[in-house]
Amino acid sequence: MQIWLSALLAATPSPTPSVDPANTFYSPGTIGFIATFMVAAGAIVIIFDMVRRVRRVRYRGEVAAKLEAEALESKTQDVKTQVAKTQSAAKPSATAAKRTAKPERPAPPAKPKRD
Image (cartoon, rainbow, N blue to C red; front, side, top):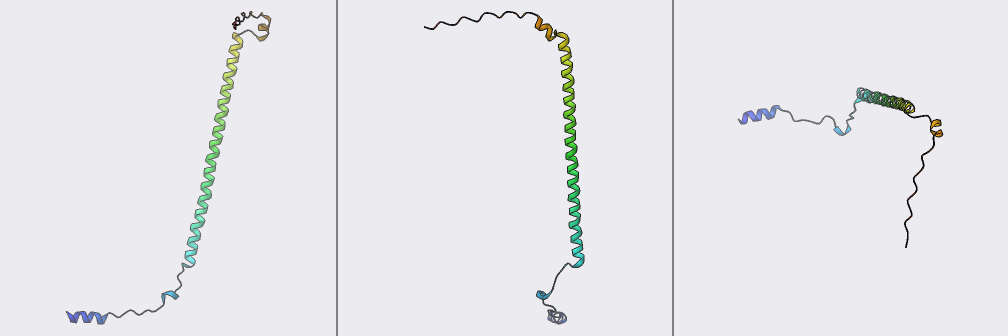
């Protein structure tokens, strides 16, 4: 068993440092710079597109609200004109009301006596 162990230890060389890691320069290089630039440019394009789409949805909502308000206003105007027409047909005109005599008011109540 010792023979095998000594043969194994003799066969494996001891590692020798070839280069000092403190003096080695690690950089992603040109390919890494281009890849990082593309990711950043893609993110900016996506952000601008999202802002444009959100703005478009918001403007559509505002226009829809304005149209709904205008439709509601026109409906209330139609109802008001119809009510005015039915009231004017049911009541005599204002000039006819002026011609008729006003009913007399009842006498005010007597003042209480103070002692």
